[in-house]
Length: 300
Ligand SMILES: *[C@@H]1O[C@H](CO)[C@@H](O)[C@H](O)[C@H]1NC(C)=O
Ligand SMILES: *[C@@H]1O[C@H](CO)[C@@H](O)[C@H](O)[C@H]1NC(C)=O
Image 1: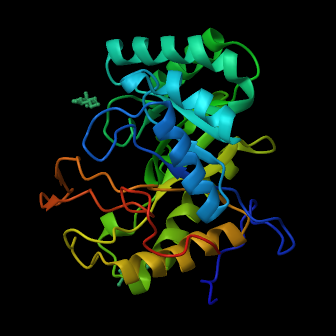
Image 2 (image 1 turned 60 degrees about the horizontal axis):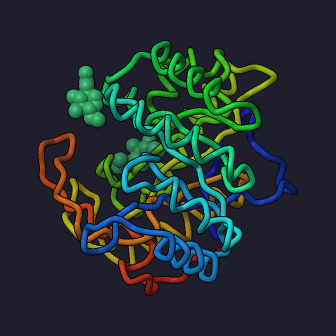
């Protein structure tokens, strides 16, 4: 496979480095929009593991649909692990998700890979880095020892200094999201654009963190198999497969951990509006269809 030339940065692994870890972002609703329960989560873990070998998923709001309550026993049964999310944007969602994490995470320590407080809150302008750090520290002390706590945000917020307080202030894990699709890239330039975004974000984090950097992951990336065209980015199964083969397999081969967005199509989702005001359908971002059948091979 032809990989783009990468700048040599502090984090760049040696060619002998082990492959990065692969995970999947996972929605908490079934195709009909109702909440998943333990058997649904078990079937999700099994399908993901059978087809891709991956054992780790991330969810966004621990109390919504009682996700922490049902996904953790499913993870235990199937040998999976979860990054539990807390949605801190409002005081009530923060309190409810934190309570669910504090209740369930200590009962399933081996199944909790980490905890994220917030998803793209800096990108949306909801918090400053300092405010978000306060919530990360508050969660860390509430849940007790032995958990990695951090956040997920857009790559450019890690690159431009907005998140510096988290890097120097003790976040254990940082997830950087980057979507060539939402940058309007054509598929032919999507891998180069993705690598460039992640190199810039990780490079800045490394330079600010010095000798003890937080654990780093790509938090979300992917390509839709159907839906609307966004500038030069055209959805399609062939392009989604190309993105998997070049961007996902390519960055894993560099030793970088990556969460693919997302595991399964979510046909219940309402349309969303892109940065340029155009309407986009977000129901076809799954590596698998909503019934867990394959679209393309999810191996490298
Ligand atoms: C914070 O996030 C929520 C969405 O989770 C949004 O509705 C709200 O407007 C945001 N607040 C600010 C100040 O951006
Ligand atoms: C392709 O990606 C590279 C790397 O991000 C970027 O510098 C370049 O502008 C992109 N090309 C186009 C045509 O957008």
